[in-house]
Amino acid sequence: MVKIKENDPKPWTVLKSEYLFQRPWLTARRDHVRLPSGVEHPEFYILEYPNWVNVIAITKEKKFVMIRQYRHAIGETAFEMVAGVIDPEDKDPEMAARRELMEETGFGGGEWRLFSKFAPNTSAMTNCSYTYLATDVEYLGERHLEPTEDIVVYELEEAEVRELLETGEIKQALMAAPLWKYFALKK
Amino acid sequence: MVKIKENDPKPWTVLKSEYLFQRPWLTARRDHVRLPSGVEHPEFYILEYPNWVNVIAITKEKKFVMIRQYRHAIGETAFEMVAGVIDPEDKDPEMAARRELMEETGFGGGEWRLFSKFAPNTSAMTNCSYTYLATDVEYLGERHLEPTEDIVVYELEEAEVRELLETGEIKQALMAAPLWKYFALKK
Image (cartoon, rainbow over all chains, first blue to last red):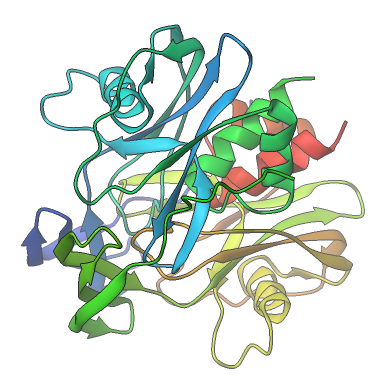
């Protein structure tokens, strides 16, 4: 256990908080904060998001169920794990992850366990992303994409996933972190 | 090499693009896009950021130079690597990483190499984060924090960093991804 030093940084005080923008896909807030030192920061921006999930899904044949989709912010199509938002109807993160895997790929079943939890940005974004490790999944039936989803499914060998990581083709940190963890633990 | 299928998702067309907000720490854009299928999405939000850097910094004595700071979005103080924004004055990402390590910890020198590149969010954020692996760094002299920085420096054993990863105490995906990669490659 790492011993925490006595001068551990303390929380800030929020002097004023106002919403700049509130839409289903973007909620931005500006906080006027005061640090323990007394220094004030009048413009600290926070983006509020619901929590997310993604899945390391491995079939009975030891294939990794991965997808490719176009990502508009970087203007590229890339390899990814299945991922999505935890909806209000999802009773827990695992249900959201199971739903997303079925919707985007048609795969389901198998054994599921929580594998990791990471934050996209602890400074500016309020949410976290849960990763599930799903083993022995199988194709259960037709997937159901949203009109704005254009997703191609791949079943990859473990060595191929490792190669995509090593060549930087899995670009999303929220996906690369659990996948590299998977390979670090598998020795 | 994974063979890309012929139906690989194609780029979207931007029909209209407007800035909602432009401040030094938050630039938000709304794009009205059309998918290759013809489906339109009138409200796709993009956050524009400069690229970022972080550093796996290891001293000659094999200690990892890590920090703790309070992160307002999640309301917690946590262990992190040194990280920061590439400034316009930085001639390349490595210079930004060297500058941040010196400013936040007083450590520098040693051997530096680009270790990884990840995107915080390929769908909604335009930027990436470069990680440098800096070995044989040493304490060179007093650090220079900004008034809004409250940072405590730690020199940790490799096993302690590994423990922080395993217990989920390194929360930022952009830091956990390169650190888990470090341990996956180190066998």
